[in-house]
Length: 211
Image: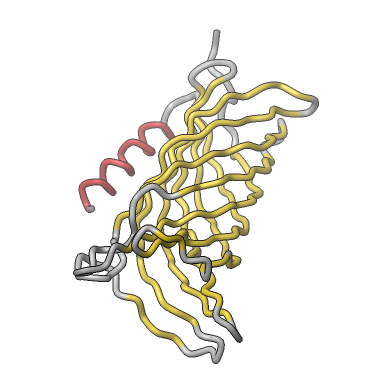
């Protein structure tokens, strides 16, 4: 994991030094849930819960209309778990690194943008918050039944960026990797999904590459 982190930091740093690159920050809220299947049957007890995210974004223009836009985000996600008389919350704190490939189209006082790419996730810690405000820690690691440290999915992103650097975006990030380590005799899978809405700001830099 340390090697992966180092390579990501080096990659983002090299982009930030480029003349056609601008640096920004963003924050917002998200609606997150798990898709859980037990022996191939979807468990309908898992519902969405509200969380938040914040972090840094780099936009590197590769042409007038296309750019690469990696993020490094702290994301509070997880899932609601609905019971007959109450709802518990599985709360997962993670670092997400979505790397988006975007198309931008001029419109009015800015540009619309849309695109997507892979999302790399690193789960930091997790817990179950019950209806009575009690907490139960969820183990993250390689043990049977523990949540996996590494997550992988796809990020779909769209939004609008004003010429002054202010931008608004929405994303959908469905998970591909199974978050659950195998449990003997049980076919169990859990995949993370969340919708996010963000507001952010870019600090200078050129918005597009020279022709």
